[in-house]
Image 1 (cartoon, rainbow, N blue to C red):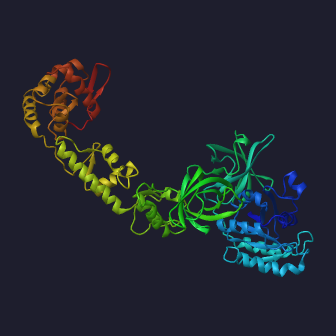
Image 2 (image 1 turned 120 degrees about the horizontal axis):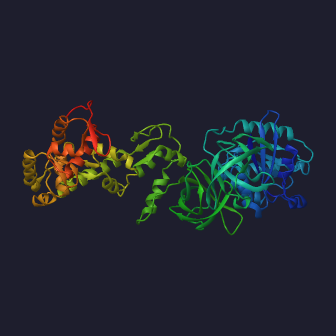
Image 3 (image 1 turned 45 degrees about the vertical axis):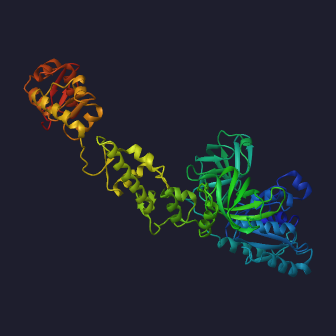
Length: 607
């Protein structure tokens, strides 16, 4: 299916044309039918002789309903621009042209209607219309002359429409979904239904989606309809009605959006480029921003005439390349169009940041610059760049480093070098200040690096930085390769412990003995890292070969043996034997049979 929106001045025959093409009445409201004036969006559909299915979104032409018009045209990929032969180009024709230009809609056709009322004015109306559309995406659109009431020219219009649709790029059925809601209502027996124009991706019954509006909620698709027929799945382009579970229709509004979960940035600040209209330095600082079916208040911070930052009154699901219409909140005209360049904007806190940001944005392609995004952040997951809507992600940009799979990390090597140098200095400082320290704790290293500019974004990258710095990570700490702990002032005390334990291998020194030798927790830990002692507990140390010595003695006992028998065989105390036996259990050299008995594991590798 293809979605086509109408556009044009009020009372130029848009609804009549849709009615003639589809046989359906697009005006839904009783007031619209009574007054013959489209107030809100209307919907109709048909199948062309080629078999192409077309859904029309009929929009109001009156200036007071420009917001409704923008909600209808915003998500549409194709436009049918209508100008009445007997009235010619009028004020809202210009507003609708500006809106279409701002939205970047490049596919469509121009229809001169009511030719039966003023056949002699048709050539002048065509010339006037083409002049007004010069320099816009519709400048080269085909022009068809029709009479909706008499039916003349409709066959040619259908053929031209078919040609336009054939040239329209096909959407990606596997793309993430962003369905802008244009209606929400309740159907008895079914519950809440929302409708919208599906421009990419596929919706399926049973899908879990995210609804973004005044709040963000997880929702479930109960059912789908397209062209008034139930469907298990609907693929873009299409008009679709989505039946949602456990939601009140009153809680969903036009401008809300249904999204594929966790794939869209929902943001309230974007950096943009002006695409048409009033220059940013001359424009008012407050606008109404239209995108999709949404209309939200916004404040503009201009960087220069063509670039600025928009702060929205509520977050919206936006991506790089989205087209925005900026409308005067106090009037009904389009002031400017804007293209979204960045949905994850940097903070601007220093003097001159605005000018520097303008210079950076001035050289940025419309589809974004993945290399610039990575350079600014130092490292970015590819799936995050994809969520921004950036193009050119099918291959690694020159000068970047890729880590992991296709959804892994892209890194900027100079940032990696800066992180590595910072880490080297921190490790050196740590060991200089604390000679007994095993190194810099990995948690402290990550805390340090995430405070740098740019910050290290994820602890998963710490190992890469460690390698880049020529360091090693072991036991939760980072240190130089082959780093040997210098016991320094603790050396005499450790040597004395070794002397005593060589005489009585299982007579661990008491806390008072350790204190007299100036051996605290840090000193004992350092001695253990140096391979000089074995710590069975905080204040319980033996020589490293104590387990092997114990195994030789325990193997001589009748099996199984009791804890008391083991204590006597090793000539030690209960304070030592319990943690020593637990140590042997953990190494798989002994097995505990019950609370008091153990046995040697004969298959153990031996002490």
